[in-house]
Length: 539
Image (cartoon, rainbow, N blue to C red):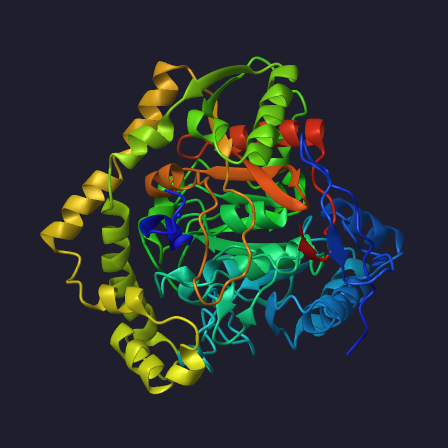
């Protein structure tokens, strides 16, 4: 999650590198920036920006196999994640990846194609259980050695779909719920993930590694998780597409939790279509996650059928008024995005969703502390980890302070441990207050006859700072949909001096089809996604 909004820094919160050539800014109204690149050789990776459809076509034609594609991504990871710019996006590789790919190639030869993800390499965030040789640690040294006994429900769905589990991605440790001044993308196990667009900039969190890996073409697509901003914010910072689904659309069982009220897994991809393909594979009703029962009859095996370049025509879009003020480069991009929406036939209405939402205060943060303690204790009680409770994690970190807490401490873990159980009056009151965001969104959309509400996802990527932690970006649109449990999609909106910004669309529960259609129409009309340049710095 992006826990900055609760604190004072908040917006309210192997192988040699194929070097990269610098490019000029792709901005609306921004001046040319001075940039420094990794070196002066073009990035000629043959799978750069390739889509799932294109990979399938090449496998069908015999130009590639799943095994050859997997090998290329493993080589890519060795070249630029472990060496070269050293992104630290991948925390662990799957030793079974090649054998999985080879088995799927055999199926293809026998005429069995499981679907669009057959043979496609995918990375998973390291808080998602895989019942294999990989660990699940949430980036924490306290969970080193934790190998899950079985797959998380969504991992089982991915295996059924024919995906190749390439490895696990780094993340903000404990999904960014450890310290009030953490550096997003840093974990004691995985180190600091770097933003592939500009290497001294933060990739945001907590799905930092998933966002950076997709942006840097280390995989076809990746899975992140979100409580509040953890898919949307890193997708925006890294210049990719991210989807936070309705809570209940994707099972959370087998995922290290923060909040049972708000947690969800979500797709991270370079295109809306690829994100839609991945979303279809992740959905399903899980007996071990009762909330998924609410999705019965509301899910779709193929979300690509809703993609329509003309989807904005005749639609009414609410535009968050606060996104019209702030950093002039970001505001310029947002105004340009609004003009694109208008040109595609949308009617624009200014709204003040964040103003209404902020009146709810800190209820969300209270909920998270209670639910994190309860959920983590439940998860650890049956995990194959040495620590069996949140109290054990806190004690481990103190005993290994030099390794586990070299830059910032564990105030949020300690604050959560001090909370009572879920029968607490404070918790029950906070839950009721926080979830009133649903009524705020529903009432606004009904009263103004809106098809969606849009805003700036988050501001521009800030410098990596392990001493002071994350910085205020001036924009943050994630909380209303996060607390409501409603869907949220971000799409690249352009860059300011090489730094990406994203455009967000939100709507009511299970409105993924409508949001995907709108996001796709905007994406196809604007075409702001571009491969990263691995700039050393900017300015």
